[in-house]
Each structure stands twice: as C-alpha cells, then as structure tokens.
Amino acid sequence: MALDQPSLKGRALRLLSGREHSRAELERKLQRFEDAPGSLALALDDLQAKGFISEQRVVESVVHRRAAKLGASRIKMELQAKGLSPDAVAAAVTRLRASELERAREVWGKKFGHPPEDATERARQMRFLASRGFGGDTIHRLVSGGDDD
Image (cartoon, rainbow, N blue to C red):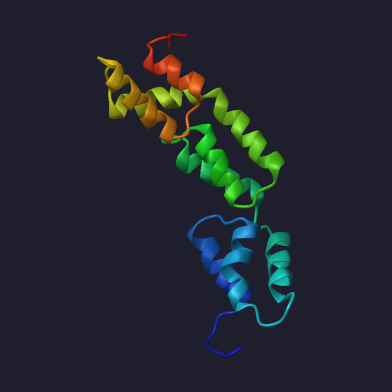
C-alpha cells in the first residue's frame, strides 16, 4: 500500500462520518481497496467492537430520514438492501406500521390536500401513495375518506 493511500479503517471512518453505514455496505464499498485477504474483515471487526458500526443506529437513521415521506414497505426494502438482520428490519417495520395512516395522511395532504373528484383522480392519488410504499388498506382508507379514527 502506498503511503499516501488511507487505510481500510481510515476509509471506513470517512464513510461513517457522512452517515451511518451497515457492515454489509462498508464491505461492499471497501472491498476493492482490500490488499490482503481478511484485512477488511479485521478492520471492520475492530470498528464494530469500538462501537463505530451499529446496526441499531443504521435502522434508526434510515427510519428517521425516510419515515416522513415513505411507507413501511419502501423503508423495509431499503433496510433489507443495507444487509441488516431480519429481526432488526421486522422490529422497525412493526413500529412504522403503527403510524402508517398518520404518515400517509401527511404525505397525501402535502401532495393533494383534497379528496378525489372522480375515478381517474382517485386512481392517481392511490398510485402516488402506493409508489411511496404505503399499504393497500391505508391507501384505501385515506383516499376513500374512511380514515376517521
């Protein structure tokens, strides 16, 4: 390794300084810089032992950044793509589903703010909410006006 090149740990810390990354994301991004087989795993093990890599913080970060705009299905896909454990993803999705109707109402209100006037508009509003990852029951309750709790 050349002296002017940052170490694997240095590269990982630089990535982590921007936002939380899962171990799988760091492995994927840093794999091409690995000189000796196993050196990346050792560097990530050390960072994880010191608390720099935390699956729980990654989950909280994604949920915090995305929950205001996206439904539980979309956030679940993002968490799974980050290589997080199924248990952590399931726990986050369960928490998100509890507030799904309120979050969908907020997103819908910002985009449309009024009930659909005809079937075409209704379908457009439903497609928009579905593309954001909100569940079918939530979309139907909201767009049909049956969301009064």
